[in-house]
Length: 241
Image (cartoon, rainbow, N blue to C red; front, top):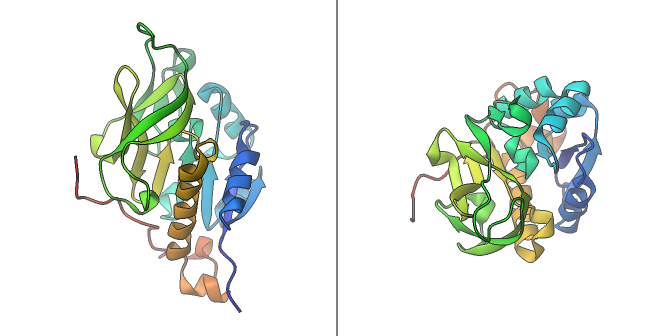
């Protein structure tokens, strides 16, 4: 009998797009469960942090749910972590939004406001090309220059440029995909990005499956309780442009 895929926990902090994320994961054969319980984050084998709207409101809601500490600890554990849109921005140290807000501090860097110029309006809403800097399991089968769907007024500026896996241009070049060991994130919405967006979720599911210890598959011990749980994946080091 085939083992079911690992369950992917989708964090619910009233951020708008989590049900569409859940449906997209299920459409590519993943088991997804939406939760507001920090204990589920502690036990998770894989996690998605989605989000739309304000980073300031999002951090306030995460704090009220008691999620901030568990999310930081989860990211440090080596288990697969995917951030989406505002969920990507929250991974960084801080955001300029609302006069400045402290974020999760999982990745070094700040989140800045786009400056409107000429025909470029803020927020950016619509399809934009993403150019890929490195090979990575998350991008298997996704060509460089592919279009993805964006809705955002702010963009992440990583303190370590090498964590930028893919970039897009909206008046300036900005990080559209970041990857640092077990943590990956997209500024665009894969669940709104047609077949290639679903391909990205499918690739994340494969990363999750490969990161799963054999003992978890056999039911002897869960990944969340293993102090030696391996990183889900590492960022490739060969640049192609």
